[in-house]
Length: 227
Image 1: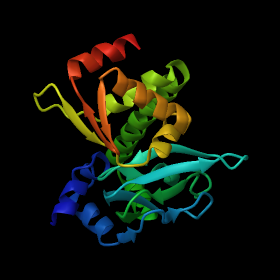
Image 2: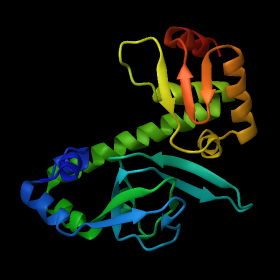
Image 3: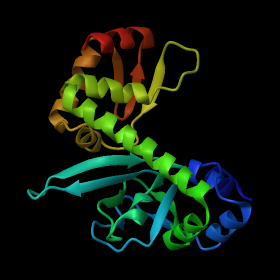
């Protein structure tokens, strides 16, 4: 088994499959390469697959009646997406999926996985568990967006990107534009830029393009708790 398949095998959904089921599912995969800004699917397209991103980044978004794009999620490598569509009455994608950078995705046959679910109560429970975790995460995100001010949203997002390595600084690289992140956080790009500027003035962050330095993690967390 190659490295990509090993990492996919360890994902929560696939870990519940038997080896025979996993082999059958991967035998019918559809790898795709996407250029930056290329759509994987559009809202309303027929949904016969669900996906794992293996390289790059993909945004899931919707357009308002006024034509304003709302970014709902940014998919990162080795995350599942579009799997919930299998259980919808209409098997149509409810969102757009657009590559934010050159990306690689693997599509899995949704009907085949459904057939496995019909045969295995344990697999059904595993799927329910995974979807429940996702639902809980989205409920928390909605609560955050509806109750926290703009500065808190930005600070919490950056906090989620920190990788603990024992030091008191953190270097982050934004994997998408500030416009996309602003949409994801339900603030305007101008507000997002103003918040970042204030954080640099307050010597909380250092910013160079998409590279962000958190100068002092302890100070950052105190600042975030008081925002």
